[in-house]
Amino acid sequence: MQMVQGTFDDLGTALAAVTFVVVDLETTGGNPNDSAITEIGAVKVRGGQVLGEFQTLVNPHLPIPPFIQALTGITTAMVADAPRIESALPAFLEFARGSVLVAHNAGFDVGFLKAAARQQGIEWPRHAVVDTVHLARQLVTRDEARNHKLSSLAALFGASTVPDHRALHDARATVDVLHGLIERVGNLGVRTLEELSSYTSRVSPAQRRKRWLADGLPDAPGVYQFKDGQGRVLYVGTSVNIRTRVRSYFTGSEQRTRMSEMVRIAESVTPIVCATTLEAEVRELRLIAEHKPRYNRRSKSPERATWVKLTVEAFPRLSIVREVRGDGAKYIGPFGSRASAEAAVAAVHEVIPLRQCVQRLSPTRRVGSCALADMGRCGAPCTGAQSVEEYAVVVRDAVHALVGDSRQVVTALRSRMGTLAEQERYEDAGEVRDRLLALVRGIARAQRIAPLAASPEIVAARPAPAGGWEVVVVRHGRLAASTVAPRGADPMPYIDAARASAEMVLPAPWPAPAALPEETEKILRWLETPGVRLVDLDGEWTCPVGGAGGARAALEPDAVARRAVPGFVAAS
Image 1 (cartoon, rainbow, N blue to C red):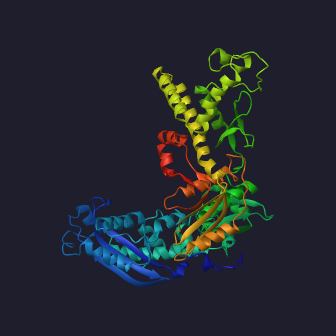
Image 2: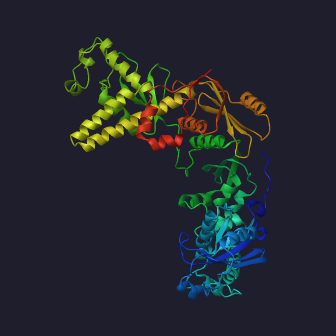
Image 3: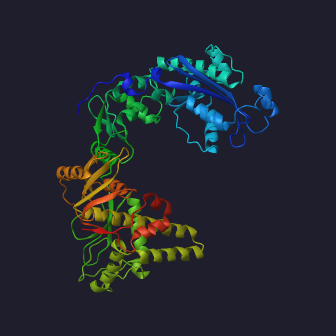
């Protein structure tokens, strides 16, 4: 990728080129739900020059309270013949078209304007907003001004207009305050609108001086790697716009303490442009697994998965393992932690009398029984009380629950919870509930991942934000290729090219995917988003009737609703 040295202007919109409309309102009260605007005043400026002014009284359709009249000097009689908000607001919005709004305590003024727009059925034009109160709190100390009110700041910066609670006068004063604040942040290296909007004094000067690291980075989606002087990866992140995201580390948008430390150490940023956001997320995950960056907390070891295995032997048992092997055993998972895997195993043992001892048993060698056999929780195959054939019936029930229809086990566990609750053993009932949830999560995850892991190729597409189609090629649960078909173009040549150039992927032992489980989960979430089209499927994408997905939906309706699993079955 060819890198181009950028300028400060490349890092964002230069402040000298921004058109600001500084606005101030007078109202009948402090709440837009029960108060109304009585005056709008605004000044349009760019590059320190005044381009125009706007001022109008507004008839609020209700009496102005006496204390408001005393404060502003605006009386009910003064606004009787004034325009109503129905005409005043569109006129102001036309004046402010394409500008950045500025106000002192912008939440108040912009909040009233937005409320008026909603009441009139006018779509708010999504102006960027700069609040001079926020900037003043970062830049003006109490030694300079006793507070951050407009009157105090106007006096500090020598405003040519004294604020007096009339909209246009206060807007003119705010212009001078804005220019004074911009001059101060300019001395600190803030030269763009984006840096101004996110400015905070918590970002150290040393951190701001590192902003050159964003020079020349691509204005495109992808992955970025912060590296130290020895080329070691410190942090890996992803963004829909690499340049904008990296630039935020040197302004006020990034406020995590450890990130400030990371920026002080960083000496370079390496970008990787990706065709789609899914590709960026997957590359981020793979890079984190490869480099183990010290400043990444999430997904630090995504390759360390935990599975529950039903062993292959004369008397199978449940075992917690770190990897799936091609040994013919049944596996569920992966689980997020060993504790959740142990909880799932305990849930199965609660209702299915699988043996829990860890030694390998022989049909011909007898050993002593354990307490579980005495309690009726195990058929005691170790003593010969249960034959291989009799124990196989128990194993079939376990296999049916783990990889097929889990409804019987779920019903039994819920019944157990109800019995414990009736006995007022609420803590024990809570433990059974937690075990049940761990079990259905693990089974549901396995049942979702297994079809992708078994499919040699899945090709899917969804509408791209800028038009056209995002295309992904997935092989055995691993992202093998990603591309974008532009707006108006026939997507099939792009799809064919992606398939031809896609990574060759060999299957992993079933049901594990040929990728980090977290990568396959990301792919699944992408495939399950609204608007995705299944272009081609080599394999099967099925969900067992009575699988754990339904039980999880009942136990965790909010989590499952967010995922919006599509209800379809497809086969080649």
